[in-house]
Image (tube, rainbow, N blue to C red; front, side, top):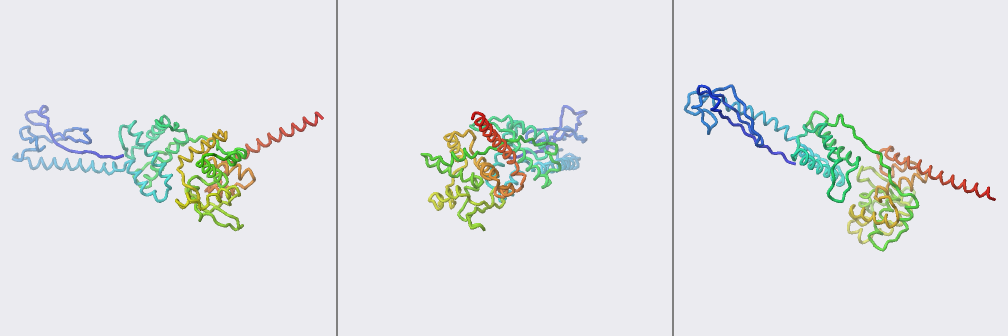
Length: 397
């Protein structure tokens, strides 16, 4: 995204509009090959005009006065244009450049990557729908936001990716709002273009594994080593609640003895920088023992071998299919499994789970409350069947 404008001011006359050999002087202003003309209330003789100089011929008596006046007009127009240019330099691309420069130290690489994706979508939108490569921040208004939202909803990726869902669209708009909020704080704009915009989220059912599904993956041995590694990483996350990035960054120094004498994981979550303290459950400890000081992990200085997120997700799909699990396995599913099946379903207080998950607000953890209600309903449904079967058996006897 770059803005560059050509600008010029020239003076001319129109002989065809002359009366008795006298005509107005016209100003010709050119901006980016766009040209406008307007007449000045200043008159000259056609014969005294120097076309090449864009003013009166030097030898004409009134040349000094007229040419000085034209220079003043040129100076006024140029000064006005340059004042507008100050505003023009506050473009969306410059704002996003500034955000990257100032936020790079505070935000994680993965978060910055999301901003880069939003920027690419903005560039595509501007090119395809506005026939430009940049936009002034002042030109971002409610219509721009709605048009960008519509573009995202209708965008059809050419590669293997699926079309963007509603919440994916909202995430891009939230990042754009953060940009305009930054512009407000910098006084680069004076109004909030998102003032009348309402973000619309759709509640998404949080996927997690039940105990049977978790046990099937935990006990599955694969002929391919890479699948066994990813299985271990996934199960470890199910029993610790660690995200993919925190798992990849986990070091031996993060494993310390707790006040109870047992092994604990202590770290700051990369996403929120919140302190997280997690007691290591037996299943997680068994996995940890297999990888502690392994040759592959020592290369990176981490406890586990480092694998790209793309590869891990691809291997998890294979693992899910080979275990007959229809749910799409991700590390998000693993974290949700830790919060529900491993902890909350086993009567661990929600406040404790919230701390182990690294949530900054208890409300974030409360999204799992409906899961517990559903589990209670399912359990009671099973209990009802058991009671009914017993009653049937007694009646038959």
